[in-house]
Length: 117
Length: 113
Image (cartoon, rainbow over all chains, first blue to last red; front, side, top):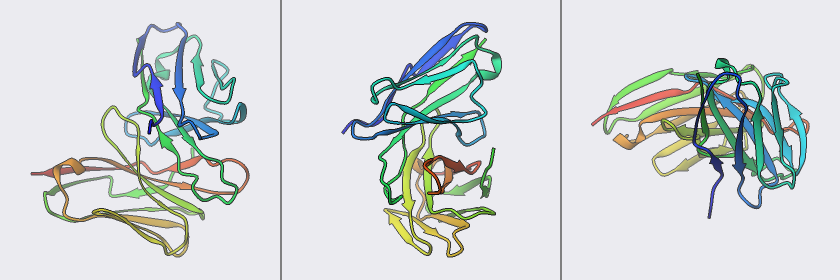
């Protein structure tokens, strides 16, 4: 049973560069979430997908951020023209979509640690 | 963004002691989740609660969904060194289509062997 995987685990980049992260959810999960976490904080919601449709984006997701899930399986999160303030852990989570609201537990990947120099 | 009030912020205990932490909110949640996060890793789900008053155990961990739907607690009995980490509560509303989680700031647990 494979869990959520993320790649890369660590990324160091220079300010102004573009970076792209990948998330592979648990195979039978049709919901996929991106969160950002900084030191001493809980994860902050960025965006989520149901299958290939991006249904909500947080105000935290500036125009430099874009996320895709083209075939409803893996997802990518791209940050353009990175800034030092983008340094954080980027977490991906997936869940099933059960209308009753039960069994909506979100399972997280190990995260991608981004450092912008 | 919105956050839950989680306390205590940190705990330093002796191995074998019991631990209790809680989360409160000014609004109602339909689901409470408790996660543990270790350095450099993503949060790992420990317990999920779906009904007001529900008491659920997972090994040495016990969590309860408050009757008012505005709070939850997590207890760890007979702590061991591998319990070290940051414990987060997260609340979830089923209103609308989003299932995003609202998070506490975490309780950092240190266990002295």
